[in-house]
Image 1 (cartoon, one colour):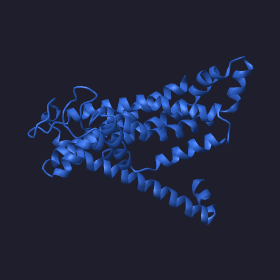
Image 2 (tube, one colour; image 1 turned 60 degrees about the horizontal axis):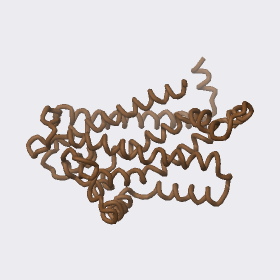
Image 3 (cartoon, helix red, strand yellow; image 1 turned 135 degrees about the vertical axis):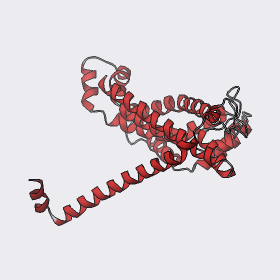
Image 4 (cartoon, helix red, strand yellow; image 1 turned 90 degrees about the vertical axis):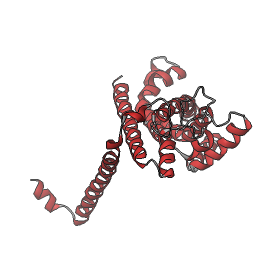
Amino acid sequence: MKSRMWKQQDPLSLVLRVLVVGFATLTFAILLLIIGYILFRGIPHLKGSLWSPVYTTKNVSLLPALINTILITVLSLVIAVPLGIATAIYLAEYAKSGSRLVRIVRAAAQTLAGFPSIVYGLFGLLFFVTSLGWGYSLLSGAFTLAIMILPLIIRTSEEALHSVPLTYREGSFALGAGKLSTVFLIVLPSAGPGILAGVILGIGRILGETAALIYTAGTVPQIPRNLLSSGRTLAVHLYALSSEGLYTSEANATAVVLLALTAGINWFSAVLARRVTRI
């Protein structure tokens, strides 16, 4: 039956189908190749000395960088996510559609989303590090990254709110609920998976960022004493090791840990999204 349908298809449709399947297969194969290459080069070099709480030139520990990565990711999300979601709620639910303010905010978000990360790093260096006097610290890096992912969270959250059917709002209003209750009890939970997808994309950008953090958080390979202490993340740690050319094996092992951390966050986010959808 399938072979008959395949033969009866229009030639152009058949060509497009072959191209789509081919490109999808190629993309999946490239992804597997990259993951396999990282695991093949890095797993043999994972050793106990890499998990020492103190970095030295002998053990080249990645544990301080891992802790710094978790700290700066959490702090950036604490800053960016409430601001981004609040802005999206205002644009989607309260602001007049097509107003000048909405156009300005959207244009600014789209422009900021296209800036290279080095620009954010230089801004963070001039403003947070120098003007505010925070120095090279996790706080400077977190605020810089929060500004970097803010446009992404705003746009994805706004699109997620717009995707919620209008009947949800009308039904809530018909039952006597107010605007604020409708937004936070009906619309926002329904848009949860879409908002969470934007947060996941923001986390991915944080985990892979190097340029902005070199200029703001610094490259000190130690566990910070407080938020005003300097510290390098896993991506910066990987860049530093590979650029020095002396710790190639340790750099490959760090890549495996960074890949595992990213995969773990994505898995946790997917599970959380399914639970939010069920609720």
